[in-house]
Amino acid sequence: MDRIIATQVFVAIVDQGSLAGAARTLDMSRAMVTRYLTVMEEWAGARLLHRSTRRLSLTPAGDSTLGRCRQLLDIAQQMTTEADDAQAHGLLRIACSGSLAQDVLVSVIADYLKRYPRMAIDFHTSSHPVNLVGERIDLAIRITNQLDPAIIARKLAACSSVVCASPLYLATHGQIRQIEDLAMHNCLTYTYFGKSQWQFTHKGEQVVVPVSGNLSANESTTLLKAAVDGVGIVMQPMFAASGLIASGRLIALLPQYQPKELTIFAIYTSRQQQSVGLRSLLDYLANWFSMNTHWEQMRPSSM
Image 1: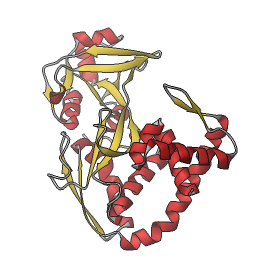
Image 2: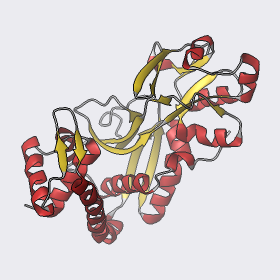
Image 3: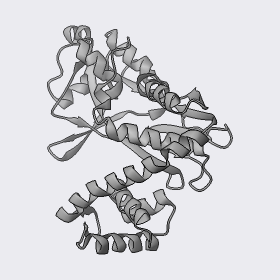
Image 4: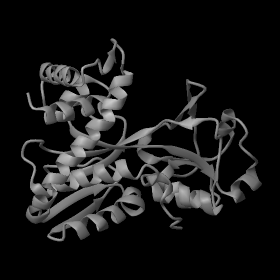
């Protein structure tokens, strides 16, 4: 069996956290994924994963093998880069939220277009999921933890959040010292979430806090601007708020409570019938997020 494919399967199992997740990502049967994992373990000469009914974890041999596998895939990718650079051309329509486009993707796409000068990108910003076929979208970038299992998606990165408020709001309404204090404050929420509940992890335990306020919106940038102006407390992606926190215009609250982590996914219609351009963009985005591990802290204040 092809060792490069076996390497891809092993990395996908680790990234997706399960054999079933790898099967969905790679469009393979579960049985085929298991066979390729066996090939990898025979090749490595050691067991690579601890397997239980609930979770997978890397063995020491698996941990060291994972790094070598990623290097091997990088080398394999580099071998086709020049051919892809020459062939990649055409227009790609990308859908994503306005905040993700403005704070992250525009800069990444600008670099992509320098590398692939025959490509063109058409951004469509929206806070709602799109119909890829009906709206003629080639690629949707979404931040979520609730993907339909039937959707074809590639994980790009984890996305952390932060609860924050302006110095003006805190001076007027008082400091937030414990999680229960949120119930007594004006919390700015997303319109389409219905009754808002903020989810946290604290000392390994899940904590859910109902919140409410007098302002909601369907776009992150609106809520962030309102928080800067002292309207209330907001939970925002770290990439959107980090610059404002660094400049002192917002203050991060409740550092001992970690807001529930989300995931950035690239969503598309087919694994088998991708254009060279779409494949080059998917690979470029995945590589950028993997190389820029501190990307959430790289955004300057934009307000």
